[in-house]
Image (cartoon, chains in turn blue, red):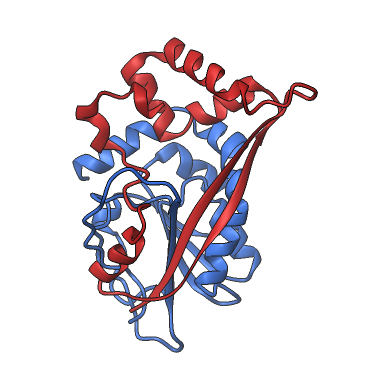
Amino acid sequence: VSAAAEVQRRLWGTDPRAWADLAEAHNQPLFEAVLDAARVGPGTDLLDVGCGSGLALTLAARRGAIPAGLDISAGLLGIARERLPDADLREGDMELLPFGDATFGAVIGVNAFSSRAMRSGRCAKRPASPARAAGSWPACSRRPSVPRARWCMRP
Amino acid sequence: MSALTPPEQASDHAPYALSAPGGLEAAMAGAGLRMVDSGEVVCWWRYTSISDAIRGLLCSAGGARAREAAGEHAVRGVLRRALESFRDPRTGVVSLENTFRWVAACR
């Protein structure tokens, strides 16, 4: 994995249960807005890049979506697997996406990307309908970014 | 917590890297995506006590990084002082209003 991912693995691995119990749910309005923006609904094959402990994917599954996720933190991913035992949840680096091209109809990333992390592979597929990517970041900012992402969604 | 991190380590974890006006749009354009929508969402982070708030903030990547740099005791002290102004003196509940921006784009 990349050096940036190793840093994130270390930083996010300190207390994953506290994140799931005390922090993650505060962002549920944001997750719902992002899922709405990505038009996630019944049958949507959805990838959450940096899925953490899986609340956004859980909400997507309640909408009838087919959830998949990637996260660098084994601890957070373990909680996501408890919540979504049938989902395709993988531990890995978002800069080296372990999914094939043309895989997902929608991709989301919630507070997952930074300037150095916005480099990813291609796992898009031809659309049956227009697909969307959606992401979010805290509204205040302190530095610019130079991303060059490739999203794994249908063209 | 960010203030506790040495400047040379600041780029290790940059949660606000894409938050400046135009940052998200530039990220999407740089990825070859076409912007189709955007918005803002307010999320209230509410904790039943200062202790819960500190634990909830320490478990984030930003909290972990500050703890690595300054030690847990120092981070807890900073958070306790900072959070006091967000605590309801009657109930003890700590409330933090956070606004997030989101964007949607198509290939």
